Image (cartoon, rainbow, N blue to C red; front, side, top):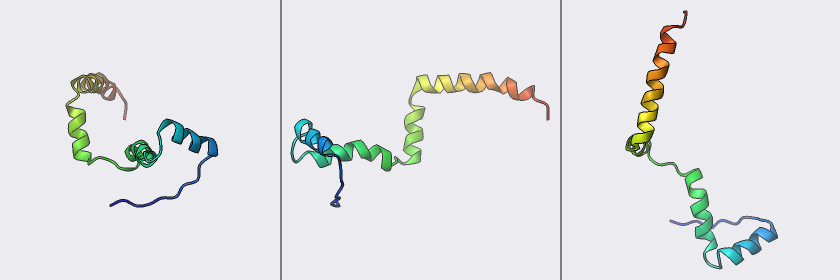
Amino acid sequence: MQKKLTITIDERVYDGLHAVVGRRRISGFIEKLVRPHVIRKDLEDAYKEMAQDEAREAEALAWAEGTVGDVADETR
């Protein structure tokens, strides 16, 4: 379901949107920019996606292994 939203923007930004994006495409353009900032993916899906990044996982493992020794040396 879509909702109508009224926003106020600078006239130069408005003119730029019309010139660059074009009429009848501004809403979609703004939604694509805003969506990632206000709608979060399901946390489980996000963890699965991160786990598939082998380079990131290798870096995280190396960092974790490198810091384990630091904890053992600390005084309590």
